[in-house]
Length: 164
Image 1: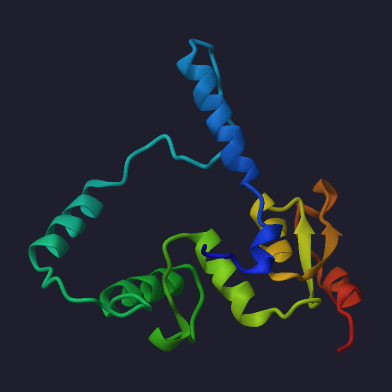
Image 2: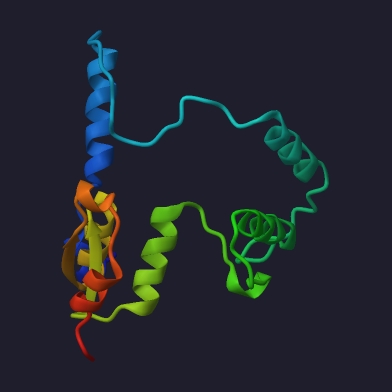
C-alpha cells in the first residue's frame, strides 16, 4: 500500500475551505448566509480575458509549455510590475503557478529545512501556518496592529531575525 511521507501527517484540512463548505451546506439547507471564508470575487473577468483565452485555445498546439509560464504571460506580468512602479525585473526573475498557495508551498519545500525559522506578520493567511507546519519550519509571529496599518516595520523584522 502506498505510504505518504511522514511530514504529510502534519497536514490538516484548510480552515478556510472547511468554513466555505459549512457555509455552502447552510445555504443549501435554506439558511441566509454571508460567507467570509474564501476570496471568491463577486465579479467575472473582463471581456478581454475571455478573448485572450479564446485566442490561446485557437492557437494551442497541444504541446507542453514552459513550467515557468509562457513568455507572453511573463511579459504581461513584467508590464504590470513596471506600471505599478517596480522596475529592473526580467523574465528570468519570474515564474507562474496555479495559485498563491501552490507557489508558497513550492517555495517552502525548496527553501526551508526541518527546524528552520520563518517569520509571519500577523494577521496572516491561515495557509501560511499550515505550509510551515508541513515542511517542519518553526514560526515566529510578528504582530502588525491597526496602529501600524497592519504593516510590518523594518525594525520589527530586524529584531526578529535570528543570526544563522
